[in-house]
Length: 182
Image (cartoon, rainbow, N blue to C red):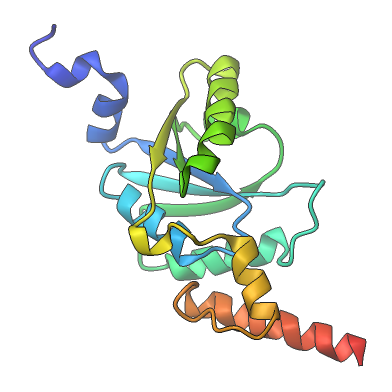
């Protein structure tokens, strides 16, 4: 074992040097659970690159540009948070942006199997890319973007579930949809 015990654990040494981590997701919309993971992740990593996925298979409520703009606004006072959208393989995106760690949130045991498979595939595609799993704060363990959209659409209050800019965006999307129906 080396004199500096963290040299034996490259991911720990990388984090201690203020390395960059990528936090990918669709963020449609970003929730307070996502914000919690990013904020707490900044205590471990020097920089976090929030990677907003453009998935051609899904039809998001908010465009990639809207999602990116909202996240940039939420973290405007945090210069260590960078936000950009991407399409394609996460391993390529991480490599192109000099990130060696992927942050993934695990809300429940049901998330683990999918996230574990994805982490293994990413590691197969790029053995230098590590996955760092984080649990959200307990008050957000039930929270998902889909649940927020459904609760909001059905008239429920999402104020404690999303940042104010997201709530305003959801309100606007709902007003537009209601106008187009009538």
